[in-house]
Length: 312
Image 1 (cartoon, helix red, strand yellow):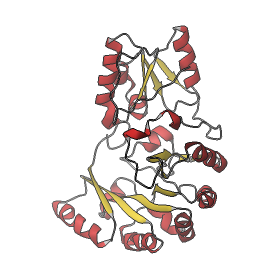
Image 2 (image 1 turned 120 degrees about the vertical axis):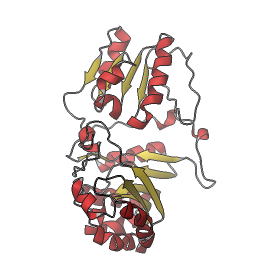
Image 3 (image 1 turned 180 degrees about the vertical axis):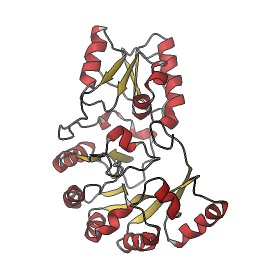
Image 4 (image 1 turned 135 degrees about the vertical axis):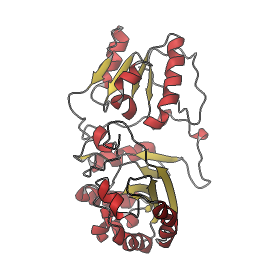
């Protein structure tokens, strides 16, 4: 099977490429564009399979734009999809019986990406490359679709497999795409110790509960972590309670960001506007309050009812 990857963010799509099967993955915000691409390929007689979180949660909608839908994570089912396409018997839907075992090594085809399309700093060989070490989240926030798609049980790649993936990609810098890289504390400790000899700079996402493990913060910094995104979401304690994010405690934020700064980890935070408990006064004062926390970047989002979440 000959495989090619086209990244629609940075490359033009060749709709005339004689592909036997076109596979498209998209999150909810990307779904309209994914449907445009799928419709154009199908207009030209290509078979299209759609997957990813949006197609998995909105199967009837996605099916209008594709010959086949892969529901859920694809590792355990993709070989069957390719075989069926080759034999001309593509099914309308595919779904694995269980979530994939991350101890089965699958190395992404970074070698198929054209790095020249991406920003590469003068000191680097590669752009910032995404690596994933865990899936799932132990928390269950009303507005988040992670648990719906990946589950609450933390599934972990063996650390040795993560290192092999890094050795294959040979990245200059890494972004670990885990929703919470320290969701399993012991796994995180093992990972950070294994990363330390590689002398890589990397970024990640952490929960506010990282502050319960000061040694892990120090170990992350020693292992090359220079930046992390933390879902603060709001400084309104009532709103946090209302959406089930009780593990975030607004009175601890100052201490948390001081702990990160003390070891040289730059903090980014995400905020959400539009919770039922928000007042106009809350929103006006939020930025001033966040600036007092001494963080580096702030991302502000409007509360959005994603498919299959309790906010929907």
